[in-house]
Image (cartoon, rainbow, N blue to C red; front, side, top):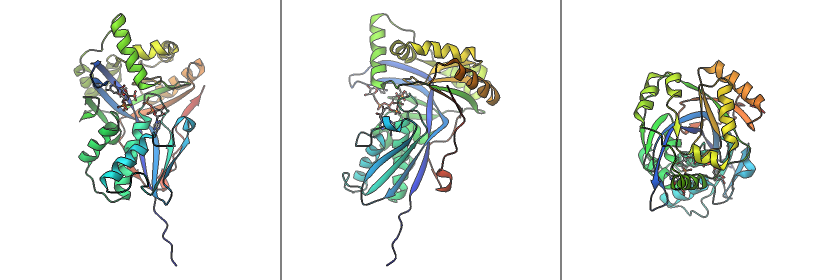
Length: 321
Ligand SMILES: C[C@@](CO)(OP(=O)(O)O)[C@H](O)COP(=O)(O)OP(=O)(O)OC[C@H]1O[C@@H](n2ccc(N)nc2=O)[C@H](O)[C@@H]1O
Ligand SMILES: Nc1ncnc2c1ncn2[C@@H]1O[C@H](COP(=O)(O)OP(=O)(O)O)[C@@H](O)[C@H]1O
């Protein structure tokens, strides 16, 4: 008898950095209204789905031991949501998922959200559901605030919880150095710390987003560097004071500006060009304030299906501290 080998589908999905993150006051539902500008960066995860008798999830790559392989994995939430939509048993959907992590775990770069977005796209194809991008985006927003952006990629303005997106024009490619920290920070804890700091003694708030949008359209990294801002930065630094040193070290190494990525603790440094990014990465690595240092560029596209051949990731340029 001829046995048919199921065909796996692999989706590659990017990390994000928030170039502008304005956080409003806490809402009754526990969330905060945001005005944010996301940019998708060239640090990626690969998520492969394949039809299987035994359903489950496995995680490989850097920080894999910190990622849950049960129902708490955000990719598994995507599986359950799409299984319900497809009329399948969400407890036994008959799918095996392999995640290859290249995005730092709990680093404020939306790695879990990225895997959920990738799983949505891959299963849409595997189960031939033909759900359009708009509906996929809505399903993504049910999983988490950052998931719709992971699907969309590029550069986008996010409002609401960050899930309502409008694409933003970004001319040219921007070059970044990414400084990874030893341990992650919890997103809800960082939002909570910001609320506490604001109640106790107030904190500065980032200004309007329009000047940053103009800098993106101009494509001038020097102009953009002056306008990067993140309301969560003071909270992340309060919980992890060493980040102040990391931010200073990146600028001393030659970056135009440094910023905590989202809720941190990863720090992102904007550089003039690709060569400068490599030099800054080497020097920051030598400063001993980061676990690992990588170079990246953005914007890059959102989640997309890649062929099996190209699913074997090239080793990203990195410098070990
Ligand atoms: C801060 C940001 C900036 O892009 O990213 P990260 O740094 O975590 O990657 C996001 O707002 C994180 O989005 P995401 O990680 O999807 O968060 P969710 O799962 O939706 O929410 C986790 C928790 O964070 C808090 N939260 C999240 C989003 C938001 N607008 N207000 C909040 O207060 C809430 O306590 C919520 O329960
Ligand atoms: N697929 C996943 N990849 C990474 N973390 C995940 C995943 N699913 C759930 N998590 C959990 O989400 C937490 C936040 O991880 P992550 O999304 O990488 O960071 P952040 O929210 O800071 O951007 C992790 O500590 C981990 O326990």
